[in-house]
Length: 201
Image 1 (cartoon, rainbow, N blue to C red):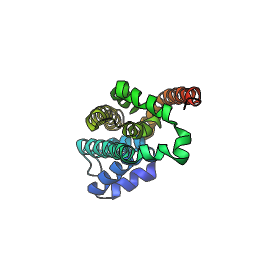
Image 2: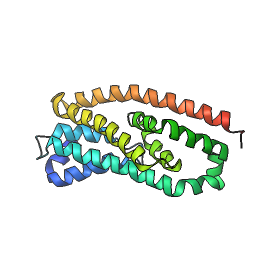
Image 3: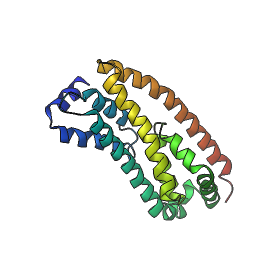
Image 4: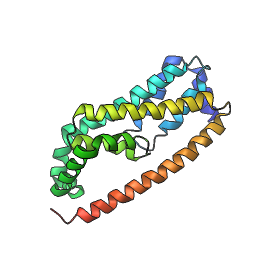
């Protein structure tokens, strides 16, 4: 962490904002990317290395929402075709697809909002919102709102919650441990749903 902090302090502020934004966007494609840590680090570095807290928030928030909307667009454009043939059909049969679409029609906005706080799960929900053909505003608004709350909190944590970055990251780790537990519970519920509905075609 010290090495990464030192690197950010040596690069131009514009490059730092771009790097933080890329980290925030990539978690929508690669869930293992530690985007939250990047955002906290950006907040921690505000006031140092020429970074400003408002720009750190804006760069990471816009990039994260943009990345999620790109995955939504891919799901909307290509998802149905993928799940109609081959391996895609084995993952979700037509009956499951119909149930998924009804779920998003009824509870999609709330599901998208809550999912942004759950590690891993947040990466997949926009894709399936697209596959279900949820209209863009029903996806963009909860995405933007939840990401603003989460990333705003992370930037604040990094900038104002302490001078010791390791201590701040430890706090984030504890919070994410609880959220990861919630994500596991949601995953197990989804797996149970998939098994129960698999025989209906």
